[in-house]
Amino acid sequence: MLIIGSGLAGLSFALKAAQSARVAVITKNELKETNTWYAQGGIAGVMDLNHDSFEKHIQDTLVAGAGLCDTNAVSKMVYKAPKLIQELVDYGVGFTRKGDQLDLGKEGGHSENRIVHAADATGREVENVLAKRVKNHPNIDVFEYFFAMELLTEHHLGKKVKYLPEIHCFGVYALNCKEGIVETFLAKKTVLATGGIGEVYAHTTNPSIATGDGIAMAYRAKAYIQHMEFVQFHPTTLQIPEADSYLITEALRGFGAILRNSSGHAFMKDYDKRGELAPRDIVARAIDDQLKKRGDKAVFLDASSLESSVLLEHFPNIAKECAKYGLDITKDYIPVVPAAHYLCGGIRVDEFGQSSIKHLYGIGETACTGVHGANRLASNSLLEALHYADTAVSHALKQFDNLDFETRIPDWNVEGTFNNKEWILVSHNREELQQVMWDYVGIVRSDMRLERALRRQTLLYNEVEEFYHRTSLTPELLELRNLISIAYLIIQAAMARKESCGLHYNVDYETYGRPSLSDI
Image 1 (cartoon, helix red, strand yellow):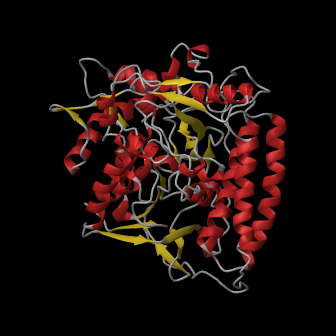
Image 2 (cartoon, one colour):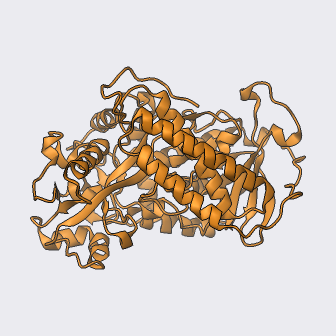
C-alpha cells in the first residue's frame, strides 16, 4: 500500500495497514512537517457519559454543519471516538489529565466539555508518538522529501476511459526532491492524506506545505471533488507580522477568554447569544465585521480575568509565543485576526474513504466525507482523520490480496524540458494568487469578487502551465501548480452555490436557501 502524507490520518492508516501488508509512506518534507503537528486544540470525543452523550456530540456537529452534514457519517464517527482515543493512549500519547481522568476542554459549538488534549500542543504530541512508531516499524518504508505529483491511471497506459467509474489508480509519479529526478511508485492501493489548502490564501494558520497537493492530483485524474467553497477561517491568530499567523487556540475562549474591540467592548453577544463559543464561521464574520466597520487592524482576546497559574498551566506554548512579542497573556490583551485554517471539502469519498477512482482512497483534510458539512465543529478534524483511517484500512485489506497489479507504467518523460533560473516568477505568482484569494474569495464574498478572482486565476493558470511543461520540475513549481488548481476549485464551487451557507457567505445571497450540491 502507498500512503501520501504523514499527518495523523496517514500515519494512523500506515500503522494499521502494516499489520497485514507492506506499506510505503511518501512525504514531500520531513515526516513530522504536517498540519497535525501544528494542531493545538485537541480531539473531540464523548469520554464522560455522566455529563455528556453521543447524541449531544452528534447534534452539535450537525448544527455547526449548517444542514449539509451526512448524519450517518457523523453518527458512526462520534460513536467510535472513545475507542479511537483509547488507541492513541495505548500508543503512548500523553494527553493532559486531571487526576486519573482525561482533562476535557470545551470549544466553540460544543455543548459539553469533551475535548481531549495534550496541553495546547495536541498535534505535536500525537505526531511525535506516531512518527516514532512508523519509523521503527519493519513493514513500513518512509520516503521523506518525495513530492507525489501525478496519479497513475489508464491515461499512462495509453488507454482512453469512456466512463469515469472505469478509472483505476496504480500509484504515483513522485519527484525525488534531493536528486531532482521523477520516480515511479506502484501500489495496489493508494491513499491520499496530504492535508489542507491554507497556502492558497495570504494569511493562514497552516504550514507552508499545505498546498492541496492530493486534491489537485485527484482533480487532474478526474476524481469527484466536493464542497470546496467551505473554507474555514480560524477566528483568532496572532496579529503580529513576525508571528506568521500563529494560531491562538479556540480552547482559550472555551476556557473563558473574551473577545473585545479596540474600545474594550465585548462584541460577540451582539452577533450570537453563544458569544465566544459560537461556531467558527460566525465568530470569524463577527471579527471581520468589526474590523471593517471600525477600520481597525485587530480585535483583542482578553484572558486577564482568568486565574494566572491555571491559565499558564493549560496554555504554556501560547504564553511562550506571546511573550516573544512582549505580551503577558495573564495581563495583556492579545491582538488577533482571522486566517484561513481548514477545508471542509475535498476529494469526495464514501463511508469507507474510497474516492470515485478505483483503488484510490482519501482521508483526513484531503477528503470530503460529509462529516463537516458547511462548517467543521472544533476538534472534529483529528477525530475524522482517525475514524476514516481506521475504516479505510479495514476496507482496503479485504480485497488487497486478490488484486491484479499493473506494472506497465512508463518512466516519466523529461524530453523537451530545460533548467530555467527565472524562479522569481514562481514566487511572484504564488504571492499574487494568495492575495487574489484573500481579497475576493475570503470570509465574505460577492458575485463580482468571485468573477474577478476567476479572471485573475485563469491568467495565472495559463502562465504557469506553459512554464510547467517546458522547464525542469521543482517542489516550488509543483506547489504553485497545485495551488492554482485549488483556487479554481474553490472559486467555481463558490460561484455555483447561490446561497449563503455555513462558511460560504456571499453578500448577494444573504438568506439560507435549500442546500445544494456543488460538485465539480
